[in-house]
Image 1 (cartoon, rainbow, N blue to C red):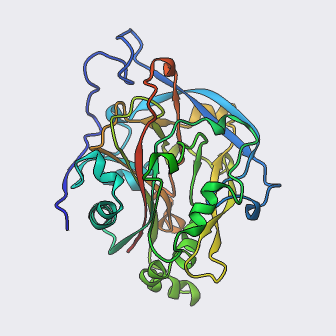
Image 2 (image 1 turned 60 degrees about the horizontal axis):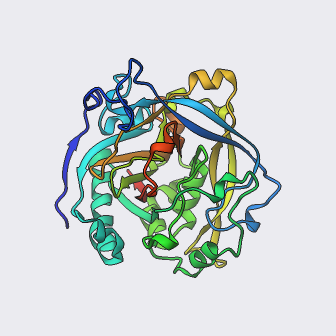
Length: 357
């Protein structure tokens, strides 16, 4: 197994020099950074059966809102290190992967044999989980263009949908390591899982995941009073320094149930005979004035490949313990000075991981 070098990122670290937090603006008296956030009200009239794998509904209404981005590298209100996962729902960790060259992230063998075991071991080390298993690995290497249309959604039968449909369903899959087959950053505030979506993934995603989840699933089926904990995480790493369209994350403590709407979407299944199951996630609705004041969105300025972001998709531990963060809403954000951003797209790799205690 690859050697992992890790140190915890200091939540009180200072931003370099006197420049603005995005690293592109000259020093001014105001160091605040703003981004354009997109919030949507989903059009639930388009059923998930008509959408591509992983396709959220089209939008009935959207709102592009100018919101302050708080600097996660200099935020004393955040709990630093892995402990932050259960408080605000995300953590930035200093971590050097054994894959040190950009080109290695374009090689499926290196991803599967080195990076995936590295990520699974890291999640167990950081969270104390007994087992962790990567569900899939995805790459984003494109600018967002298609999502500018209000009615856009990924249709069933689209080229991306057909490619995903041809993948073996009962093994870990790697999407988009070739740039032309990769995805755009998601320009919509959302979370990919609900707790029900997590449970359904453990049961219907793949037979090896179901095997790891057996103790939990058996307890659920027996209506036991104590059910082992399970959580899902995104391990999000830039492939180069982020100069545009950073991923922004929302402090779970600033989110309320009325801010969210549940949506269903298709996901591949290695357990069901038809090769798919229905996943459930969240969209973040266009915020009320109260929500605009309450929600706190963060990013890591000039995030490098060593500034690893781990965000929580869902956590069954939060069902009985309100002090445990249930999830982390997130979205790609267009920085206010986007015109000065380089034309190259942001590139990142994301591992979706299920952890079991």
